[in-house]
Image 1: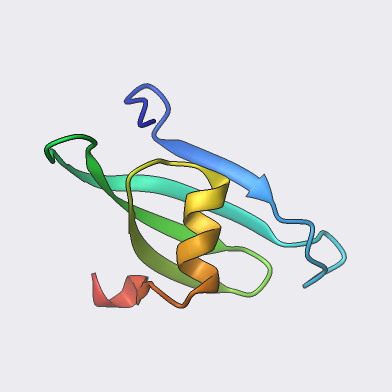
Image 2: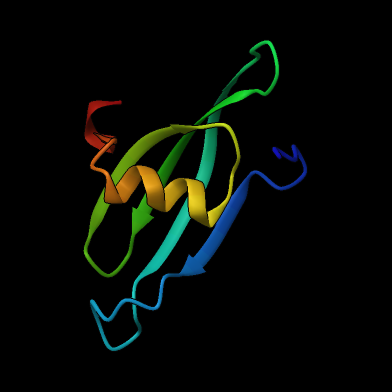
Length: 80
């Protein structure tokens, strides 16, 4: 669940895109209140593949971010 005190996460997927794996930084850039959970707009940076994108998720977790990223359900951060 979204924690306003923790609006940024950093993690490594363990995928070997570089000698350091695949490092991801994700940060909430907007929050929209919905009926049950807030809808979070999150900007992510894949440091090792040099990709920046924006996803919408209900929880700021590695699993939610990677599901959207892996499913190509993101927009370029340049479009924001």
